[in-house]
Length: 160
Image (tube, rainbow, N blue to C red):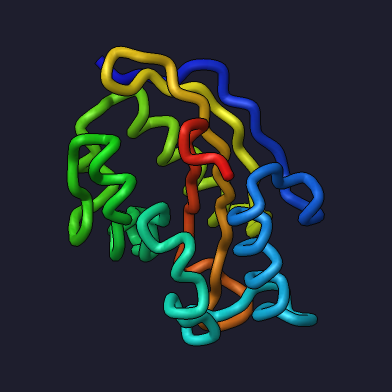
């Protein structure tokens, strides 16, 4: 069974904190798109501008009253590794209880605080411990409230 082991996470404040070059490049893209604003809007980004990450992202819509997260995109690489597809479903449909709770807490924190996160983690996957690095980036359509989240994740065997 998949479970969460040893999460190490914190606020992402500068690109140098990100080890994987593709994740760093995506974070720099997010920074450029937000400019002087607190958040970029979803309309500011074009996935064709970061093809190097497309299979390794999850894009979630923030649904309010009650707060829930709908998965707009669950990257093909993430689907293949996890063994389940969440595109078009709510995060509540994530089949692993402990991991669902963990990811939901990340999303709720991002909506509350609006601070990008860096996560280094070990996750049991296919019966083996797998190390990954991920960044979580918030977006806002009104400039104030987080309306979308982007998670980009690279497992240890995918490192450049």
